[in-house]
Length: 417
Image (cartoon, rainbow, N blue to C red; front, side, top):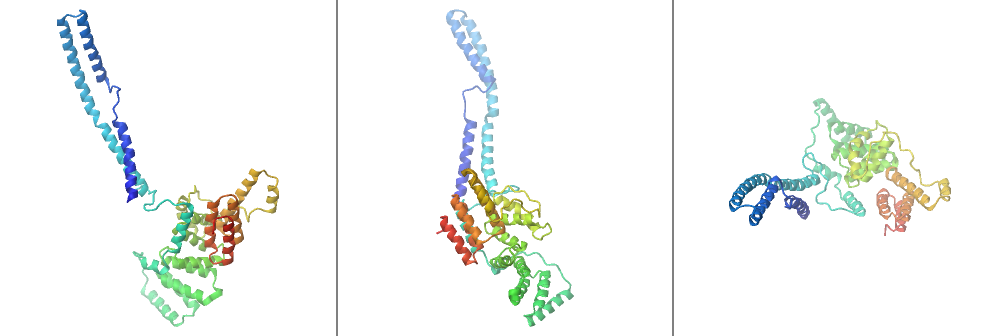
């Protein structure tokens, strides 16, 4: 409430300053009527002087005064009409200015009608470290799969199926219930429950398949499970869905479906910058026919805005040329010895930037993350080093040795305790 009161008061103060400027009177005559009045008053003064010098007789002076007075009355009447006709204009303009400033500011901030809101009522401005901490809290405290499913309302209607098909599906359910260890039966149930829109039953059967297959469960089994969890939650990436996607990525770091869903999770938990990088890289890799391309094309412009990027959709599947692989090579180091200090810093900055971009999109080893954090600390870019460290904590949450290596690098850079 205090924010809105302050905002409205500031807008009213600015509008008041405009109104004062419009209503302020000046000594400059407003028009021809004012000029005529000055001339006639001067003529009356001249008549008195001529009378004193004997140039005019009292009768002539009286007659001239009468004529000048008549003209003064006529000029004053004309001036009054002009003044009355324009007197209200500054007040009207002042009211319009106040309305535009107050109403327009609120419309731009909150979003009214066709205007997109630029503000976030109720949220204070955060420093980078606070934004990252807030996103971490949001991610850790987000609802579970069960809570997300319970909160769903107004679900779209499911297509109607003939009675014979529904009876066959029910027979399949009964058969699988009698044979709970039948992987093939659960696979058929996943497909048919999905067809009916029963995504909860579908992911439960898919989860049973993963459980039965154990170490033999494939990446496709986990991405399918992730997909069904998210469908059952109405598009929300729950902690359970994130975990399934990360298992898929641990087996195939380049899996497009899992990477898309990790990006979606980041977008939903306050890290549009990371979501943007992941999705941009997926567009670069392609192919254009991949199932994740269409949803990325729909969402990435908004992610780019929130990430502060002036973005243009790249050519899908065209790759990204000129990206450094794993930091400086031996030839890079040798050539750096012949550079000036400024040239060497510029080269290191370029390599650090490239490595940061690659790790954010493609991932990398704990040694590479530690190298990047240390380099940023040396360059004095502690805010960025801290942000990279917090990202690395998420990446290596299930890898204690990798997390320890990254943490020690962050401590040396002065961005971790």
